[in-house]
Amino acid sequence: MPSLRQRVVESPFGLTAPRWSYDPHVDLDWHIRRVTAPVPRTREAVLQLARRSAMDAFDRDRPLWELTLVDGIEDGEAALIVKFHHSLSDGVGGMRMLAIISDPQRDPPTWARCRQHRQAKRRTSSPWSPGPPARWPRS
Image 1 (cartoon, one colour):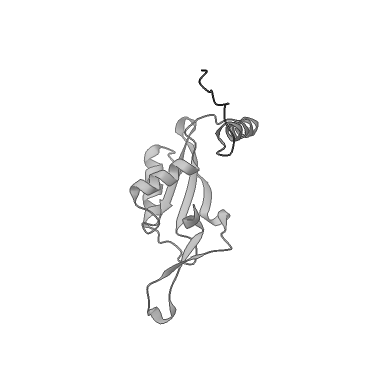
Image 2 (cartoon, one colour):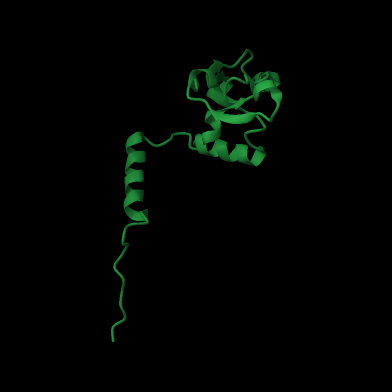
């Protein structure tokens, strides 16, 4: 997702439209945060936190996105507040990006299982592998 590494650069004197530029110093500690849910630690409290986050302007000197993990919600729940500037994506594209960066499984597989899966996939789905031997019709 290269757009998450880009920031907006204004043109000198505002003579042309702003352009996208890769930011070689993306600070993930600034873009990705972890906070504890505010009291009373309910979903409504988390929604209020998300509303306040949505009202805050982006820092135009950085890529235009933020991700906040909210833990400490009642019943051991957690929430993810994802904020993308509308210039990065529309709603459908934002959902696609969220699907890429998240895992729907409650207990994700271990790294060893992921590595085994990737290796097995490479062995079976490589476009360069010859695949099973061809069967010639017998005459």
